[in-house]
Amino acid sequence: MRRWPYLLISLAVLALDQATKGWILATIPEGQDHPVTSWFMLTHWRNPGSLFGFLSNIPPKAALAVFLVLPLAGMAFLAYLFVKSQRPVELALLAAVLGGAAGNLVDRLRFGAVVDFLYFHVPGGPGWPSFNVADACLSTGIVLLLVLTLIHPPPEGGHAPRSVLHR
Image (tube, rainbow, N blue to C red; front, top):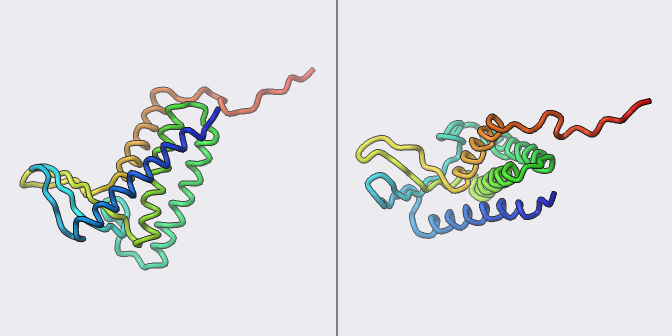
């Protein structure tokens, strides 16, 4: 099965993620908000931590291990799954997740933090933590991969070599 066309999904996610972050960096000062609707705003926020700002205050050497080494290991595992997969939908989802992971890794290398800018909230009330295109592709791709696996699991032994016949 040809996989390189699916890698175009990864490149598209990475390009869109970096382009939107570049636009935010150029137009909205860090810490500033730009309301779009009563329930959505663009904001320029840098998250040195992970999901919901978790681990944002760890020492720099630990941050290097957690936010650079672990994502690289995760991307290597995703690449392994990508090479082993035979299902087109799975390949597309893995490619989207890889592109999202690459987008946030680029931010970590460039800024030491991830640029977040999409903020949804209840008018006058609480909101979802800000996120970016890479986060959206990562979380959506992972959830859809889990759903796909639960609803339509790969065939048993689908990746195992054929048995050798014995006489």
